[in-house]
Structure formats: C-alpha cells, structure tokens
Amino acid sequence: MHLARFPRVKICHAPTPLEFMPNLTKHLGGPQLWIKRDDCTGVATGGNKNRKLEFLMGEALAQGATHIVTQGAVQSNHVRQTAAVAAKLGLKCTAVLEHRVNTNDTAYLDGGNVLMDRLLGINIEYRAGGTDMQAAIEEVGAKLSSAGDKVYLIPGGGSNPTGALGYAAVALELMAQANEIGLRIDRLVHATGSAGTQAGLVAGFEALNSGIRVLGIGVRNPRDKQEANVHKLAEATAEKLGLKGGIRREAVEANCDYVGEGYGIPTQGMAGGCPGEC
Ligand SMILES: *Cc1c(COP(=O)(O)O)cnc(C)c1O
Image (cartoon, rainbow, N blue to C red; front, side):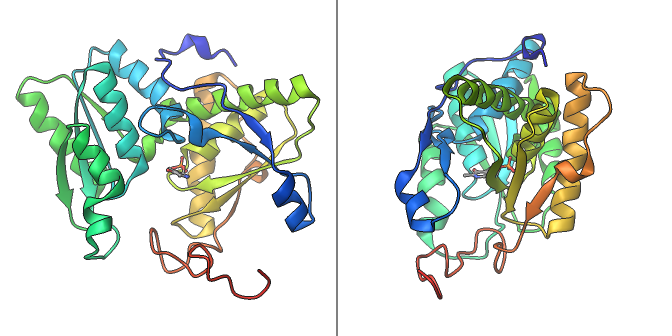
C-alpha cells in the first residue's frame, strides 16, 4: 500500500490520539475499549471527512480546479469540512443541501453546520428531500464550468475510491500506533453512512493483513444495501491501491438496527432516554 503515489494535501492534525477508555470499559464490563480520536482531525472542528479530503483536494489541485462542488443533507458534516478545506486552500466552493430531514426547527435549518458553512463563505443551494443529489451537483457543476470555472465534484460524504484512500491511510496509522504500544486490536466499530470510511478501513486492513474485524453501525440504509454499498466501494478502493484478489464479502459487516425512523431523526436511546438497563 503505497499512498504517496496519490496526490494529497496534508490538512489533518494526525496521527490522532489512540486512547484507552477505562471508565466505559468498566461500566460495560466487556472488552477493553479504546478510541481513535478522529474527532480531532482539526480544520473546522474536525471529523472523519477531513481524512478523505486530503486525497480529494489533492486530486482537485492536481487537476487545476478552482471551484469545488459537493452535496449533503442540510446538517452535513461533510459539507462543513469541505467548506473549511476549500477556504483554507483558496478554492471557491458550492454546496447543494438536501432537505432530507423533514423539520421546521430553526436550530436544524440555520444552526450548527449550516452556520459554519455560511461563516466559511460558500455558496449554498437547496433541493427537496429525495432529489437525485449526484445529478444535482453535476448540473450545478456544468453551469459553473460554462461560466469559466474549473470544477471538481466531490460526491456525498466524499465517498469514492479517492476519498476512501483517506481511511486506508487511517488503517495504516492505527496499525503503526497499535504495534508501537503492543496493543492487539480484535475489532473496530464505527458509524457508517456514505460508506467511504468503512470501505477505506476494510481495504486498508486487508492490504495490511491485519486480522482486525470492522463493524459499521448504519445511520441511514438497511443492512443489505449498506453492506453492498461498502463492499462495492471497498473493491474499487482495493483496485486503486493495486491490491490483488479483491475484498472478501465477509470482511464487510454492518449493523443497521439503530437507524430508528430514518436518517437524522433522533431515537430515544441517542437522546438519553435509555429504555431498560441504563
Ligand atoms: C460522515 C460521518 C460518518 C459516516 O462516514 P461515511 O464515510 O459517510 O460512511 C460517521 N460519523 C460522522 C460524525 C460523520 O460525519
């Protein structure tokens, strides 16, 4: 796995810390729990999308792009991080936001990531829920191109084989940290949505022959669809990395039992009204 063969801009605060969680481990009485602090990647409060943006923006700069176009739900973390990295690199940025969650709550419509997007000075366009958002950015991108901009499109969540390289890089970073401190990792659990994080991790861990099982906790799709999306992207990422033999289907595992009513709709458990045990 030779990541230096791909254009990349180093924007993340990395390596992110790998920390033991003694209290949660004790509380749950289960296995030893550690956390890889990818909330601390820097750039507009951090998060996982900055990892993908290192390779996506690297490719954009290599192609001479002047204008980044991407999409997400209204409160997209991906859009906020893309807006920040584009600002840092002096690139124009347009985001197409989908009203995926049906709400009139002004905290949702104007606060949080939307406030950050506006502070970062990007152009925002809105579309109704259920819009084909990939088609929407292609359309917006075509208009900007004909007006003279050199456009680079980033899919939702930054999840394509280029973006997923960011999490293949994390697989490498984590293995180095674990080996350094003599930590044997059996399983890695993370949230999975647009699939790039899990695809990159799975491809990276396969390339390293790590023996670590990855479990994605779904935030949107039913399990079959999520696993199929991740597997397809992991295969494409492995191919980009020059990995022979593809990705085993069993290496892709998701649990989508916590989606609740739908994407972005709080469940009782996440709101703290925990039924039963806690
Ligand atoms: C985007 C996101 C995810 C999911 O990552 P994908 O690569 O889209 O699957 C998980 N957690 C947070 C906080 C995110 O913003």
